[in-house]
Image (cartoon, rainbow, N blue to C red; front, side, top):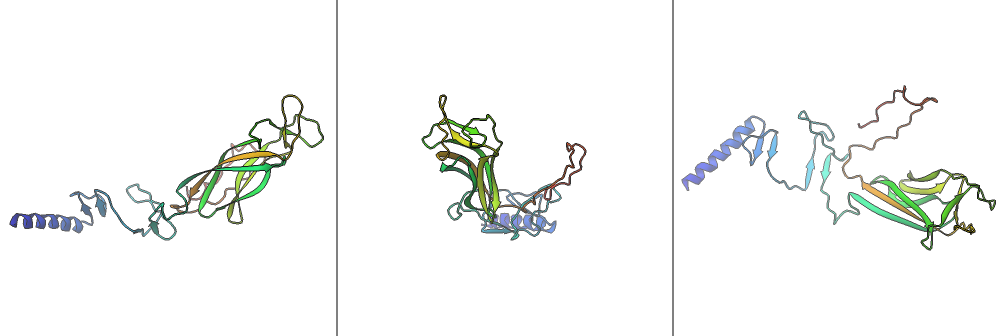
Length: 222
């Protein structure tokens, strides 16, 4: 019993001495920070005095604007941190998709459209482009305009081709169908759970040059 008391006193004295130096260690007798935990920690919330500020030891931490790291529970959140979404739109006309509202909150998610495909609603891929609507294939291919963009607080999708229409065709006689297409869109939605700030959009005027001599300001937050 006396031995146990002695060990307890020694351990307490070690913590006290470390505390006197401004550093406390748990499961370590040589703490390197104010609080050095050599093991797992569990907490309901963690408050940071200066969120987003790098420490003198080279560390960098990102927190929410509430000065706290909120506990992430997949059972309580509406979505995960990284969400893969395949969006299939059928019955698309030859003009393509101009503005489709995904209803995904732009304040809580960042949506990236990383791939797409155009095909007929029956699953075949006899699809091509045609310039104009004069019944003649002019062999002019428009530029793809397939992207995700923010509008009125949600993410929107457009998937079309400039100066061209989508047509259904085959190797013999083009059927020139304009309203029976399927567009598959492959999206990644990243949840804005731990961020320092939303980086503002960058606009730069190259003044008609190739940009090699321009000095562009560094984007904020980097």
